[in-house]
Image 1 (cartoon, rainbow, N blue to C red):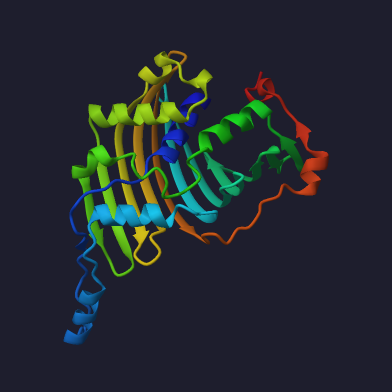
Image 2 (image 1 turned 120 degrees about the vertical axis):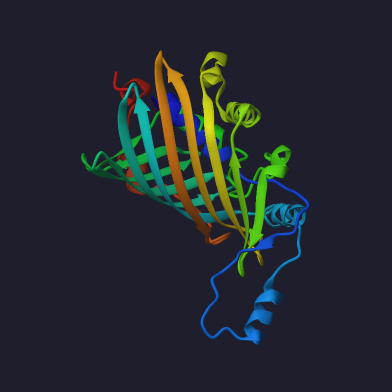
Amino acid sequence: MKKAISIIFGAMLMLMLAACSETAEPVEKEAEQGTTAEKKKADKEKESDLTLEEVFKKTEEANKDLKSFKSKMNMKQTVDAAGEKQEINSDIDMEFVTEPMALHQKMTMSIEGEKQEIDAYLTKEGFYMYEPNEKMWIKLPEEFSGQILQMSEGQTNPSGQLDQLKEFVDEFDFKQDDKNYILTLKASGEKFDQFLKDSVKETMPPEMQAEEMMGDMKFNKVEYELLIDKETFYLNALNMVTDMDTEVEGQKINMNMDMKSTYSGYNEVKNIEIPKEALENAQEINMDEMNGE
């Protein structure tokens, strides 16, 4: 189960954006009462004639020197293992610094109606997490935090890896409203499934790249909606839906995820430091304890 969840999070980190040569189509809006010809003309002037390829290039350029950002995320997951379903709902507030890579994350997770709040820091010093039930800080094993850092290397930009989906250019729907370029993709099929597995494999540590595990993984559906700011070319929002099957230790697992996220505060976060209390008092746990052994 832990391996399957790691895989789906890896996929989330990898897949973002593509390019094509069509101009964004304006999003149709319901007519507002009292709309004047002047207003219609003003709305028309806000329309951009940039192609998706041009938006791609400008987004890539704007994000070259990105140093930090903030994100809010709501994620709903359903895990079906051998006919037993488990629902996980998460609300996440995150601050991220790209160099050196560091994050601070506050998450409220609800599993089968039971809520748990998590306050976590990940830096080169390690992965520290506050355990609210025991009212204490714990430090996760170095090998675990190292894996997370490795998975995050090169994925620290919310609009990063812009070349990843170029081969699926014809499948993108490209529109615009007053503020955003809107990119949507509904992908399925063997070609896209293999691309996803290859992308996820590249982010995984060597010990998690076993061919038999990757072969058991199948993406049934992936849907994206990306909102790119017209002025800054930063990512304003990313909405993502996935449906995947995998098999772990002979157990078939289906995972559905519906994620809605917004991004802000670009280059406003200067530094992320682990609290002194955590550094001095955290209890270290090993991988066996993490796995419940």
